[in-house]
Length: 209
Length: 209
DNA sequence: GATAAAATCAAACATTTGTTTAATTTGAGT
DNA sequence: ACTCAAATTAAACAAATGTTTGATTTTATC
Image 1 (spheres, protein in one colour):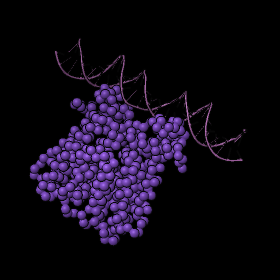
Image 2 (tube, each protein chain N blue to C red):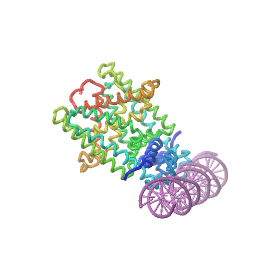
Image 3 (cartoon, each protein chain N blue to C red):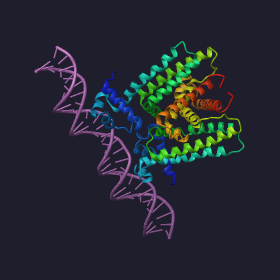
Image 4 (cartoon, protein in one colour):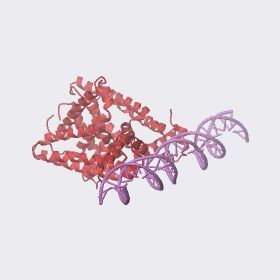
């Protein structure tokens, strides 16, 4: 199904509200009000509130999927360099789509809607297979260690990044960075997070610190 | 406030349902039905559905809090050993209270209820400070590196463990472990997860792999 | 500019929600 | 056995929910 401007407007308004209040606590009246459309338009366009959620997942996952694919096909980058880029691109994506990643996390926890579950499983499988290939490539070239658990490694990347996102205010508070301007703080945190995850991957994948 | 057996019965039934369906999607009728009490008992005992959620957090966080404290006071363990135990105890806790950790994750994402937010901030701060002391101790003894970002490190532990929990079925599928009995699989996974997180901590905290 | 399909709207729909009420039962303490 | 407070109940409550209706407006095609 192809979405027009109004579809997107509703979808992205819903995204904001789902991220802020949770899917169940968000009413179609909230969405209609903030998206400035009549309440009936949501059923008219999407069929139901739940189908709107599915539409959101289709909308966002479609654009996210492509990211990994193209990077790994590149033949001019070393496996180590590819891993670094993979990490940075993931962090960028999560920061750029904070709201969606929050919704995705909660949906994975609740694990109810079969359409969404299948979408997520498919993406995870594809990503895990691609990263597996990348690691195998590095192993053949002798730069990566043997016996790497891909799913554990992915869990660390995904888990660390989303956890830092959730703990962002706490991070700022605990490290006495409250005076720092928001912009500056976010840049700093992103750099630290990037370096942190890369260091972990290096430790798991290679033989040097 | 002290809870009697009936309180606990309701709280832990609510926990199961909140974890399975999410807080908002769980009705007080669900809870009353499954806990085998009249629906009015929930308001009568707790005041409201939301206060019941807060009671759940008080109930669980109270017992969890103590874990870290006592370990770090122990004077007969090296900093390195303490970190290992810290990790294993955390993994044990998350596995033993899967449901509650899922609820906690979602509540952190939604970030709405001020009572719960404050409870969680307080716990995080206390934990971060304790772990900070442990790391400082290790640094003074020369076994840990300088410039360790405690919050990042905690985010990796918390994030990795909860992510593995969420991805458990996928982990099993991707690694072709579907024939393995559930019990055996969970043991295996717990051991791998433990080794994985310990390896990461070692890489961040010390100079050897 | 007539026509038909798509979009928009206010209103109504039946359910379900959390909470309260008011009556009844239970269970010690005397 | 009596008393009184706590516990328990079925029923009712108003408010809010997602969805649908049927009429009206807009838009595009001829």
